[in-house]
Amino acid sequence: AVEDRLNVARDGTVPMDADAFDGAQQSLDLLVDMLAAVSNGEEPEHAPPALLKSLRDGTGGFITHMPTISPRPAAKAAPAGGDIEAEFEAMLDQMHGAGGVPGAAPMPATAPSPARQPKAPAANTHAKAEDPTVRVDVRRLDAMVDLVGELVLARNRLKTIRPRLRDEDLDRAVTALDVATSRLQSAVMMVRMQPVGRVFARFPKLARDVARQVKKSVELDIVGAETELDRNLVEALADPLVHLVRNAIDHGIESPEARRAAGKPEQGTVRLSAQQEGDHVSIEVSDDGAGIDPEKIRRSAIKKGLIDSDAAARLTSDECLNLIFMAGFSTRSEVSDLSGRGVGMDVVQSKIRELSGQVQIHSEVGRGSRFAIRVPLTLAILPTLLIELDDDVYALPLVRVVEVLAHDRIEPLWVDGQRMLDLRDQPLPLIELRTWLGLPPEPGAATTCVVLQSGDARFCLTVDRVRGREEVVIKALPRTLRGLAGYAGASLVGDGRMALILDVDALLR
Image (tube, rainbow, N blue to C red; front, side, top):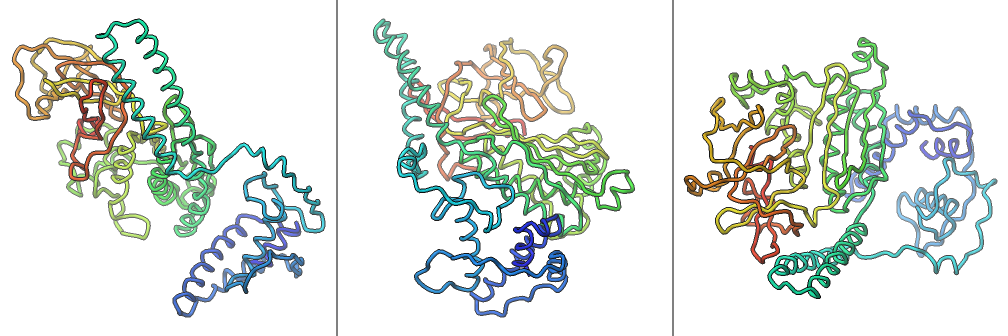
């Protein structure tokens, strides 16, 4: 039934529509389950009659014969499902030439029928020799990044000792090394870049499966799939994005009946977009659904005991929306395969923060919601602001630093039990790094205040001294220290000391 439906689509008799694609996706899932059952020696599940009827109705009554196509020679008989595999191999040969690599040439929107298929050009060995690409084991790329990181550390060390030596020739040599190191660093990072389309490619099928499961009509709109990102970040973003897309369909998009009643088209739209913004990439998952009601979030958080009623009453609408990132939060009264367990959004936020990124919620009741993720282009080398306490040095991600200002030690304001600093008539939460680290205060000593950004909120972190900006190579903490709140990693700085990289979001929490 599937082959007949695909055949009439391929020869142009009955083009594929949304129902046909849906049936094909269901059939693919069913075939995988059947093969798994056969492999386990079990009786495979039969195809649902409704699916077979849908596929056969879609052929429009045309009974056609599959064109004769010679499959690639095989050393032995094909296993179960080999006919389908041979058909796909032959189709790839038609589109790319025998032995061609899928993706080496653009795929036509509609594959021409075998009768109209143009002849493949003769093999051009000269052109193949000039292929501008080369396949490299990713472990070699990772080794290159580590070596460049060591070079950056050595560069920083030279720049630190240069003022003490006061040698003009050395000064020129270090300057030249600085420029070359920066260019090499940029070039190696570009080699590791991959389009986020690698992750986005899985979502059309995911959206269809989830929409079918919750009986909704949803169109997935993908924008900016060509945007490039460090390969490690591309892979790490997969799970958070899967959860956000599933949530947009399950929680965000209303049922067809509810959308009709609200004056909306029956088909909802989920938009997945990516774009580069300076040294960061912005990825958004948005929908035109019902939006998120802050009051419902507030009531649900109180009911589940995640926050007391007095504290909840003081929250703004935006702060209420951020409650969905709390572990155990859910607005669903019943548990389903997709939601209701209160597990998910807290993991999404934790994963994004592990990537030195942040996620923000924007929602309007009745109009839809938008989850905006912002992550750095690469995680290997991080621009930081170095700060000092006594003889220890710490690093703050520079992208989170709003401003640095010196101030005399003053008595802070106290608002709802929270220490605050009045900055240009704007009270900001005040955190003393000494107190947070458990160090005794230095009475009368001047301090420096660093204003930091965490999501939509800002706060002040007081330190002894600000040393300046420096690019550092991020190294993971030992396993025994991972998970400590407030620390994102470690690095060596220019003077040879180790610096702990602080987690800005965890400091505020």
